Length: 294
Image 1 (tube, rainbow, N blue to C red):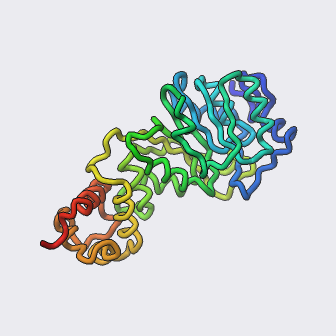
Image 2: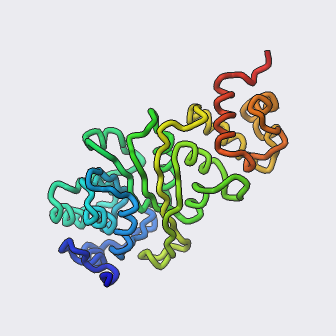
Image 3: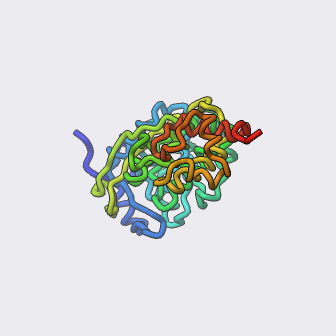
């Protein structure tokens, strides 16, 4: 039988509802906070990052520590948590005391963090596992996907997003959700939607459903190109997604037909009709300059 929502799960620490009450941790909307109190659910999320025994886990915005506790219960070698809400530090210190030498908490803003420096001494796999603050989730994801050199410093990511954002990440060509985020994410990683959560799973409940996406980096994304060039191509193409590529790509090059012809792509197609491979091929040709008139 599973433990009741928010109850201890073998670590001897108080239920999360009690932790929140004890430390006065009412969620702040300004920080994008929505807490999951059910440790059975957070352990399910943690298991998506398995195996954890030799893994250093980065967690962003741990709050009262529900997912943090789940990761440690599931055997994570070490958890490094980034938390900017000073109210949460005492609760996280209690978890650290219960798991000596396995939890390090850094007070600060995830957007200003040097991830490579933070994980330089990890000595094994690095996973990013987080119920991301929704107001910075996409910014963080793009940063992790656009990191260079590649393969990246992380080995896998298990990330919570608003369901709409998660669907944009895994969207297929031809769908309304397909755009820049899908192209960048799927070119550099294998991304799958692993779990959907209703608003009632959170405290306080957000207005929208959420979803967990699992990312595994592709060792050598193909066709090979610069991620920055791919970003420019997709920004130009999807910036005017209702227009044909021969028109939308004019913000990138004065003669888009030459670029498209070299890539074997009809200039009458629209951005959402191209595959990830076709976008990378466009970026590859653009970098080489093969599309320029003689």
